[in-house]
Length: 209
Image (tube, rainbow, N blue to C red; front, side):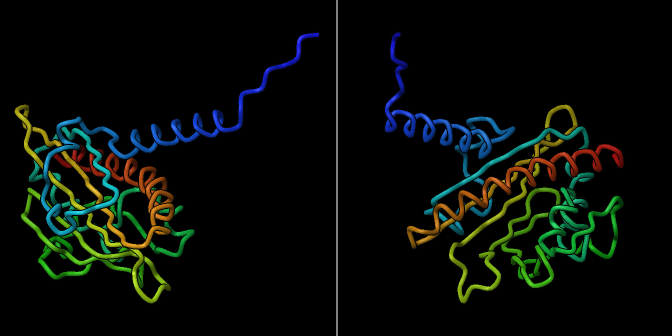
C-alpha cells in the first residue's frame, strides 16, 4: 500500500496566507480599475502614510447632481448608509436608511459631524457638492484613544454618457503593530457593507433621476 503524501505544514500555511492576501486585494478594490486604485483622490492628504487603503467603485446611470443628495444625507439619525440596516442595528448603530431625499439633510459643511452610531461620529473634512465628501476620524468606541486614524472619501465623476462614476476610498493609519489585524478584520466587514451601500446609492439615484 502506497503511503499517502501529506503536504508539509509550512506549505499549507503559505498557501492559505497567499489565498487570504489575494482575497484582501480583491475586496479592497472591488469595482475599481487599476488606474483608480493608484490615483490620488480628495482626502488622501489627510492621511498620507496610510497602512491600508481600499478603493471601491460603481457606475450609476444618473448624473452627479442626482447622486449627490443621497451622499449629502449620509449618517445615523439622517439618511443612514443604504446598506444592511439590520446588521448595523445588531451592533446598536440605530440606522434607518432613507428611501427618499430629505431637504433638511442636504446642508453639509466642513466641521459637521456625520454619525456612524449614536455615540460615534466622523468629521466632515472636505466637501464640494456633486463632486466629493471626505470624512475623517478614528472609530473605536470604548477605548481611551482611537487605535487608528481613518478617512472616508466619496467621489463623484461625470461620465460621457451622462452618468456618474462613484468611488469610495477608505484609508487607515496606525502606529501600534497590533492594530493591523484589527483593521484587516474591520475591512472584511467594510467590504460587505460598502458593496451594498454602493448598490443602494446607485439604485436610489437611478430611480429618482
